[in-house]
Amino acid sequence: MDLKKIKTYSAKSRKHKVALSALARAGKKNSRFSDFYDDLPDFLAVKELKSTVSAILKSHKAGKPVVFGLGAHVIKVGLSPILIDLMKKKVIDCIALNGAGAIHDFELATLGHTSEDVGENLKTGMFGMVRETLTDMNEAIAELSDPSYEPRGLGALLGKKLLKMKVPYREKSILYNAYELDIPVTVHVAIGTDTIHMSPKLDPRALGEASYLDFEILCGMISKLQGGVYLNVGSAVILPEVFLKALTVARNLGYKVNDFTTVNMDMLQHYRPRQNVLKRPGGKAYSLIGHHEIMVPLLYQALLEEL
Image 1 (tube, rainbow, N blue to C red):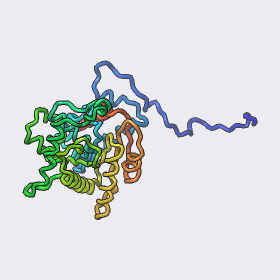
Image 2 (cartoon, helix red, strand yellow):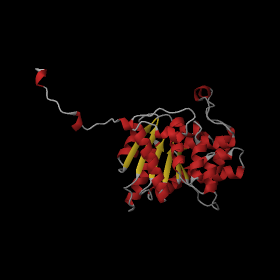
Image 3 (cartoon, rainbow, N blue to C red):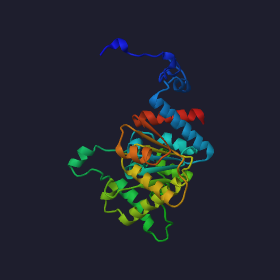
Image 4 (cartoon, helix red, strand yellow):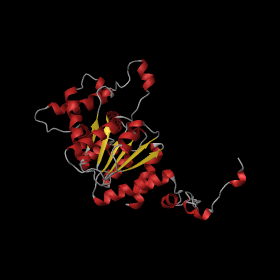
C-alpha cells in the first residue's frame, strides 16, 4: 500500500462525539451537591442518570406513576430510609418486592438488624430458622385464611402486622410506611425461595393467594404506566419476569401502555433485566450500572435538588 495516496478531510466538517463543553469541571472543597452534579462529565452513564432523573420528575409532576421494583440487596445495604422519603414526598407510587426483600424489611423493623452468615448456619441446618421472623411473618400471612378478613395482598398483610405489633423500628420499614401512607407494596414470591417457607407455621394456600393478589395490584398499576417510569433496582430474575407479565396483562385488557420509561439499576448486566425491562417493553430505556449503595443515593439527591 502506498500511504501517500491516503485521502483526508478537514476537522471542521467532522461530527465530533467529545467537546470541551462536555468535560468534567474541577470542583471546590465544601461545594454543594448541585455543583458536583452539574460538574459531572456529560457522557455515557451521566447522560443515562440525568435522563432517568428527568423522566421521574416529569412523571411525578404529571401525576403519572413511578414504580420501583426492588431486589433484597437494596434493603440489605441500608437504602430503605431514602425510598421511604421518596414515598412520603409522593415521588414513588408503588414498590414491588421479592420475598427476600420483604423478610429483610420486616426484620429491620422488628429486630433492628437482618442478614445472617448463610454458609456458617447452613452447616448446622439452622440457616433461616429465626423463631421470631418465622412466627410473626407467617402469622400475618395466615390472617388471609380467616373468612371474615378482608382479602389483602402480601405487602399489606405484612404492613398491617407491623402496625399491630407496634414494632420499635417501624420508621425504617418500607412495608410499615407504605401501609400507613396507603401506597401499594406488592410482594412476589416463588415457593421455596424464602426462609419463612421452611416453617411449619406457613399457610401455603394463604401465601399463594396473597402473592397472587399483589400480582393483580401490580397489573393495575402497570396499566396506568403510560407516561410513567418503572425502575428495576437489583432484581435479576423474579421482578423482571413479573413486570413483563403485568405489562402483557395490561395490554391484553386494552390499556394503552406504550409511552413510558424503564430503568435498570444493578451492579452487573443480567439477561432478564436487559431483555424484560429495557428491550422488550418498548419506550425509552436507561441502564445504570454500579453499586446500589452509591447509585441510589446519587439518584435520590439529584431528585431532591429538582423537586
